[in-house]
Length: 333
Image (cartoon, rainbow, N blue to C red):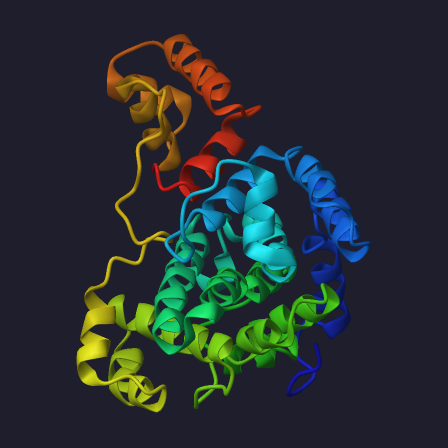
């Protein structure tokens, strides 16, 4: 994680935080071991199924518009997306908990980084489909992971509430002796992710587009999403950046107006949930507590908890965190 300058925070603190925070979950670690050992698909599927939210990630990618007919089993989903994509997907899923929190050092509220990562991932998938369709799944996964380093640097900075808000990579390097792109790439290499995904994470703020399709797609997607959010510098750079990636003006306009949900379709409604159960789930997804939801819907807190118990049973999850993660991943909230 070496960077320009020593920084106010030690690079060892950054490296220690990266090791600690980006460690895969027990389920993900065991699946990665099975992949490294060339285990049978059924054994891998059985291990993935131990984590409902991880299984949901796998099924969603396998059933996206990137592939053909839908699949209804983890075995078939794993075969369809392949070892390379599965490895990246599992590691992306295991880091979502890092992306959901508030990042005071970046003045980013809760879920801001999570939303940005998903927007970049979906846009990178669309761009890669235009440039070279077989690379689209990998561009999507690299997009999910591209800002992982921010969550790690933000955790390091929590011990120093006196630090100023960071607004650019240059300021990151002054404070930490490195930047979030380098930290993210370092983690990706520790995970043995494919080289083009590592490059995508390290070079998404480069002045010029990287060479590989995956890295180039993430680079342009990040710039495009920031331009859509009104960032002046990104708006200014976007036409030239798109041209450098081989996209004409009409293609750029299409990207700016495209529906970039992960599967290219409108968000789906979960089968089996009642209107009120879905309403409760969506209100909780905004960050409201059960008491606030009850007040808004004009009912008791116990009624909200009853609705949630039905939701957990129908979605086959063990609690609110898993239910909300699954709902976000499936596009229900």
